[in-house]
Length: 125
Ligand code: HEM
Picture 1: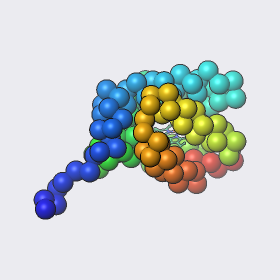
Picture 2: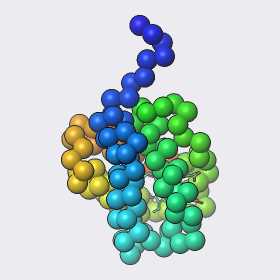
Picture 3: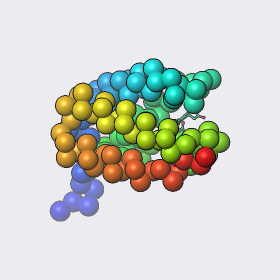
Picture 4: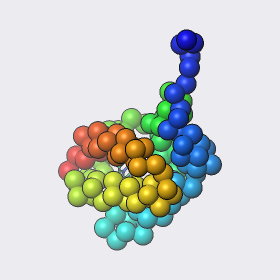
């Protein structure tokens, strides 16, 4: 078996690059419409953030080990005072976004487990 084989079935099943563009657009539309969350994103370069989030999800879904060139999650979040409640809301919006796009339930579970694992790198409040 080739050692360079790419296990990108999750990335493919969310529709690859085109699917992730829709997913990330819908996800941030939800976050920025939520009165409890939008304060975190004031003054942030929203296009750059979407681009980094697409790259991060490409990496997380197996679309490429070198896909993500943004900062480590802890560096990006540690000065933002993000609470556990805010984290829960963001995770909830992500789940609804995935459900709305009819992503397979098994993949949603894997993604949500992965996201839960990032909590210590996001919540510092
Ligand atoms: C749920 C897990 C989360 C993941 C996987 C995640 C992922 C990311 C990624 C990949 C970036 C880009 C980093 C960069 O530009 O170098 C980012 C930035 C950011 N995230 Fe998150 N994030 C999460 C949760 C949250 C939460 C809960 C909030 C706020 C409620 C939040 C607010 C932000 C903001 C404001 C930025 C931009 C920071 C800046 O440009 O200075 N994130 N996040």
